[in-house]
Amino acid sequence: MAFQCTVPAVPTVQVDDANIRITRWDFAPGAVTGWHSHGWPYFVVLLTDGILRIHDGKQVHDNHLVAGQSYMRQAGVEHDVMNGSDHPLSFIEIEVKNPAAFAGTPGRG
Image (cartoon, rainbow, N blue to C red; front, side, top):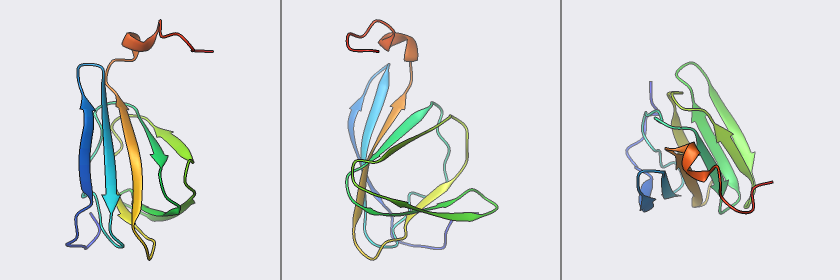
């Protein structure tokens, strides 16, 4: 079950090709992504400090994050994301469609 909210977060796709999708998400206070899951592993990098309120279908968790902080999730987890802050919140989401495409990328440790 998703959050009860009528304010959608605003996704802006920056890159979407065979290997990767990069989306900027902008949330007004209380805005939500809507119930969804990802088909690929993904990373999130916060652009602003704030509270990401995550609903996993059973529980709601408040995650207090700061600008520059990041996290990673595996594909397939259903969830809804809400801005639990009293101010706008933004993050970059990077979905890795084809990890093998990056195996020979210079700079990998």
